[in-house]
Length: 203
Image (spheres, rainbow, N blue to C red):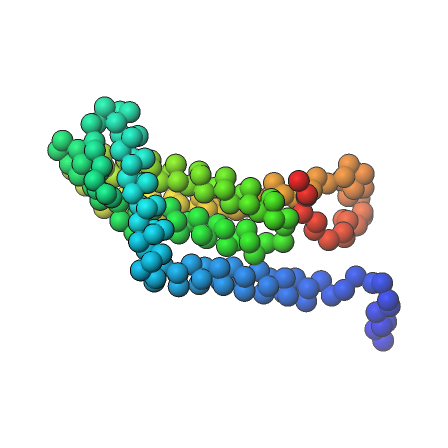
């Protein structure tokens, strides 16, 4: 006969984990859905997304000019002496930023740590996107057959992988350090690992 659980015992962990996972997925999907709904608004497109595209075009032009390519910007179009490229939706880092932010918001952590991670990764992804557009400009300038592959496959995959890896690194960053006594005891044969719940590290 199974012994009835007494007061103070650890709750059913598989059930608790399923509940936490469902809670995480619900918040993650809600944030992503809200973003895609907002992108349908002409006002958001004109006042938020289009300025982001223009900022990417200006930043990429400045990066190319550091290499002596003498480009200019007109709206979202980067003009060069022999080649031009337009920065359109999908060539910006907004979607990877939103995916990372959704994972951060859905994960239990102090809001200060969440905001620090979101702003740091947003800056990194914006800078990485300048490199992406500059590389596509150079591939197009040289009429490389790899242009479509980098544009449609390699760079989008790179941003998805970067967003996932940065999210994992952020989780590792907010985790509190394991006490020395706990790590020592867990190394002993037959020792039971600590069962304390996860508590994100405060600032």
